[in-house]
Length: 448
RNA sequence: GGCGCGUUCGUCUAUCGGUUAGGACACGGCCCUCUCAAGGCUGAAAGACGGGUUCGAUUCCCGUACGCGCUACCA
Picture: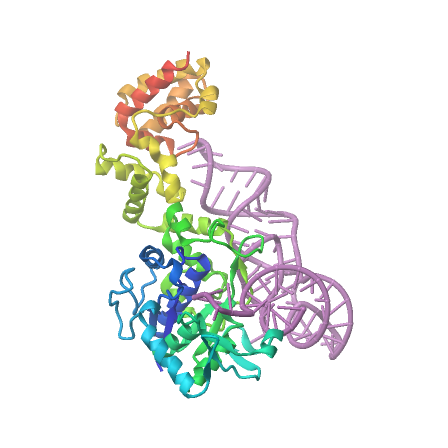
């Protein structure tokens, strides 16, 4: 039996971080077993289903690198998609649900009630064998004691989640349902439905939820709840993936940064932890820095330049060589890509704004003569490269009888406007003599 | 209220009944240093509580507390 798993999100307008992890675990299991990963859009909730809402999900999954073997190829519900078990939008499957409801009615396992259709739920407790949680016996709640049957088609003719979900899993021959623990209690209903159709239920694996750092449940607005957050903050996708597979699952040997192919190799359902996790953004930030330092300069440039343009910097006046040289001084810092414009924006403007606080401290009259001297030396030094600039600056400080910092700090501020940034000498080399001298002149003029 | 699931440092986790309860992130200190990082060394930091079972429990069982989920003609 070949494994078929699915991720079945509802297009609510955002991709929840927990949903992303659910998708990732499904994907990992499919890749681990050589099975098929299906993407199905559960858009029966008429009200707020838009193509944009579907695109948010597709884009999020693509950004994470989670490719699906079957499912939609665009946000359009009417487009065919790939795979032979379509359509993959529930809104396009109404005839199938109708047929299945008729089947239940014919077996007298469903009946009309006040315009709706209700399913005859067994009265006995149902055993849910779960690959993560173990065997769970669902007793009837007090309300279910009174009336165990539940609605499968609303009085307006719309089929409800429990029905569509089960019918699709059945029709699409899903073998393993890996989903959030919020569905665990409802699984009894789903198992009953499968049996009513005369089918064997799939294997279930309910994975714990992701909560806020304080243990409260995450809502749309909470920081880090939405995948969009990570995309816009400029995380490396592989860092987010790494963070997610380490939430609730861990490989042997205290490993933190693990290449995805190895995870695919090791991943399995029973090792998934059974308690909820709390989202702590400091960890993925660290992972981001790790991945950024390890990635190729080419990939870094690509991501960085995209982020810089997005933040509104006009890069067009600058040559590719200049831009690449500038980015090479930033990679080791491991900043989020959204922070790059603030960190390295000085490379791409000819009017540096000085940090007022720092200017007050560094652009003092006492620093003027030393900086003028350095300016003189830098006007003729050759070659204008990092090593030479460093030794030159240090010699200059020695001759003046001052500490190197007396030159370093005002120079950094003059050239970048900030007190933090890339390595000073490397940044000077990239800027080039002309810009450096101009910026020093401008700073010197402010020092009297 | 009922039903279900869970509970190891602040956070993510390791521990297949016997450990000085380990690692990572974050945090503190020191070193390095052109800023910020990185790196090296180092510090503080945990078994929710109460009962059992056992020679011995973080580990197995029960209860309590707390958290989360479900309890819809939402998904």
